Structures are given as structure tokens and as C-alpha cells.
Image (tube, rainbow, N blue to C red):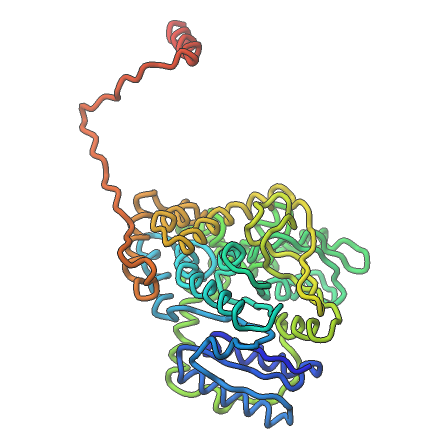
Length: 475
């Protein structure tokens, strides 16, 4: 079952190590060849050396080698795993700090809003390049497993511009099931569920334990302060919209307009530390980790023993494709009618089966209308962000950020334009395809105190309205 696995962005040490360890823990994938690639050579070589130690220390067959040449890594690959973060902590600093100065308070800032849109602008062109190189170089039918955020905008763009089998992967469903299991007091592995929606806003449409509906229990415990306190935003959305979804308070608070728009809302709903809603939580964490890795080789003393697999889907998908034994998971794919009340062509997160014939997304049907409406509020921005990246269109950047629910709750259109213009100038190092293009300013129109509106002749079809208004005034 030996397969070649190209891992793009292998300098992502923690994530690459996790996925490699998972794959090596699967007996059906014994003997795999790992081709690691990154632009950060020092981190890449550390990961290469650690991968070789994992093989040797666990007595496993296979090979690990690294290259700076992406095309070399993808040649004859069976799978291409993508875990990019273009611009690293330097670009992320602009994603977080510039919007914060304008009043847009982000907790995570990697999936929607100003931070998510600009991360998409940096990432989408590279993903499209990878897909086209993969089409030319990898084995026929090779599958891309896409982990880079912003997941939905990235996969939406891939669905428009790429011609390779791909699926976007996240662990939101798995980790949310842990919470549901604890809150409802039932083993995680005994919970049956159906999910549908978009990445980071996937709704548990059904939740059952041995045929018993778990929603009454979940709703009951969220009315208790000691449970509600942990997930205030998710709890509020459950209470008002009727369904539980797959992202933490910190993430979800950014995707809707109600919880981060002012100090009152932040103090009430986002007062827990870290990803419980703290301002800049993910940027602070990434900055800390980057500094730690810069100081020393953190893999040098890392245990190489391979034990249980993580919750990540990657190794199970590879195993299913290699063996033909089906594996069901939640994947991000182009919406080819899987959720009928979300736009065709957008990115949806739905149940997918993997086997030796490839990837098979399944039909969900209609989301509850209130859940679809919340998803649409995010999809509108994702569509515009993907178009901005695919067409190098500066105006689409402004429109994508303006349609973000949090930004629109905080900023005027002119403030949004000014913020986007500043972010584009700050991030040009990673946005070379916008060379020669800028976000045009829209100066304020000054209205003199004695200015009167132009008298525009009324359309005869509207005359009845005018007569009615006149009648009211006379009365």
C-alpha cells in the first residue's frame, strides 16, 4: 500500500508532525514516501530529520525527504497535503492590528472579516498554482487534502479554478462532539449526528444517543450558568436560532454582528480568556509559538514514539483510498447541489465518503432557513474574497470586507475602504499580483448648509403616491 505523500507547507512543525505521526500509525499505510516542501528551509530540515527519526525509532518502513522544489515533491504523488500560511506571523500582525485600530476587534481573524479576507488573498493564488502543478505532475486521480485557512474562501476558489479532486479538512466537528459529549453526559463514540453548513458554521441538524434526541438535554444545560459560561456565544446562538454549531465562542463571535461590535457586547459575551473571546487571542498565541521556535529546535527533544492517532481526518482518508474500506467524515467541497438553499458553487461542509474510487460528498438537502441565513451572511463575503483573488480586483476586496457581518456592524463604507487600502499597502510583499493596482479612495462629499436637493420630476406611475402624500398633508 506504499503511497507518495507530498506535504506542502511542512515547515508548519506542529501540524506536519501530527499528520505524519497519524499516517505512520496506520498499518495499511506502511512504507509511504513523504516528500516535504516549504520555503522556510531551516524549519523544513528540522521536520525532515524528525520524520526520519520517527521511522527509525519505531522500526517502520518508508522514507522522508525534503526539498524546496514544490514540483519535485508533487511528481508522481498519490496525495498532496496542503497546510500553508503565506506571510507567517508578519502578515498576521497586519491582519490583526490594522483592523483593530479601525475598531474591528478580532479574536482569531483567520477565516472571515478583514483578517480572513487578506489571508485568502495571500493564499488562493498559491493554492491554484499547486492544483495546476498537481494536475500536470501527480498521479492520475491524486487527491488534494486542503488544510489552509480561510477554509471556505480557499475551497470556493479551488472549486472555480482547479481541476483536481480536493477536499478541505477541519477538526471543528470532532472537537465540538467532545463538548456535546461532556455536556450531555454520553460517550462521544455513541453519539449519532447529521451535520451540514459551511466551515466554522456547520450545524448539528440531528443529535441522538441510541435513538434518543440529545437536543432537549443540550438546550437544558445551556440554561445553567456553569455550562453557559464556557461557550456564551455558541450558547446564545443555540438559544435564539435553535441549533448548535461547530465553532468556539472566539471564532463564532467574529462571524456574526452581535457579540464584538462594542465594549458592552465584548464584556458581556467575550470575557473568557483565549479562544473564549479574548481580543487577539490567536495572534498572541501564534506570536508566542513563533518566538519559541525561533529560540530553539523544539523537535530536538520531542518524543518520537507513535501511539494513537489524533482527531484529524487525513490519515483515515488516505487509509480508505488505499484499502477501499469506506471512511465517512465532514469535508469542505464545492456545493454541487448538496445543500439546496445555499448557492451552487460556494463551499459547503457536508458528509463525505472516501474509498478506493475517490471522494463522494453526500446530499444534505435544505438547512433550516435561519441556519441557511446565517451561512449566507458569511458566504457572500467568501464569494467576493475569492473573486478578488482570482481576478486581482481591488474593488472586490473592499466589497468582501464590507459584507463581513462584524465589519459592517462597526465601520462605515468609507472607513472600510480606508482600512482595506491600508492593509493592501502593508501586505504588498505577499500580494505581488496586485502590482500596479490600488484601492481608490472615495473622498467625502461636502454638503453646504444652504444646499437643497435637486427637484427630480416624478414618474407618472408614482403620481398616486404623491397625491396620497398631499392628501395626508391636507388632512
